[in-house]
Image (cartoon, rainbow, N blue to C red; front, side, top):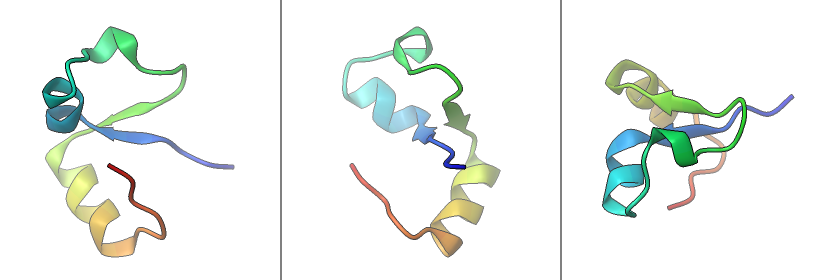
Length: 45
């Protein structure tokens, strides 16, 4: 299973909002993002 976690700041900078994300994607709050960045296999901007 794969989780899609989206940086909320990056989402806004790209001109999107929370209603534009794909189903079951997670908006990454700061605690999620900091944990993710220390264990991530793939990060894409």
